[in-house]
Length: 163
Image 1 (cartoon, rainbow, N blue to C red):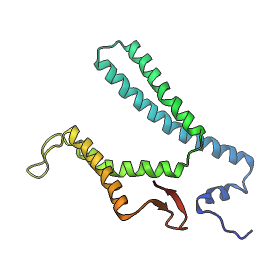
Image 2: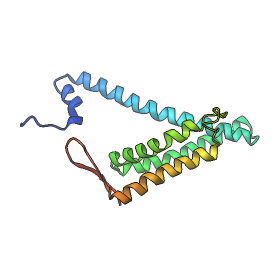
Image 3: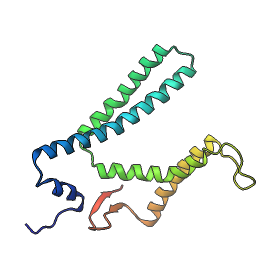
Image 4: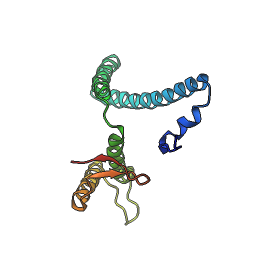
């Protein structure tokens, strides 16, 4: 053993000398953390669907069943995609780019009144177009500068490549 390991496996090196009991405890905690994140996301989606369906004048019972069917329809493709073992790093990179380009327009979209003469209150359409233009800016910048791969800054390893 040359004692060289990947930096992201350091936590598992700390667990190695512990008994199996601690391995099971860590597995349960990590699974609970991931499940709570997904649960929160699904509760948010169900809440948005239900409130929008109630706006159409449907009954509570009908909204509940339609929301359940829609969540099931969303989860089936997610389970199928997860079984295909996509590279998670590439998915995280894409999600990070979308979030980084969307954060400023989303927060500016929360302004309801004009801020003196400097910042007029944006509309929902303005916030949405700001997100789209931010994503397009990142993509155009990558094409112009010839960036087609994500490289780990520590090891120099190519994490993901683009088209």
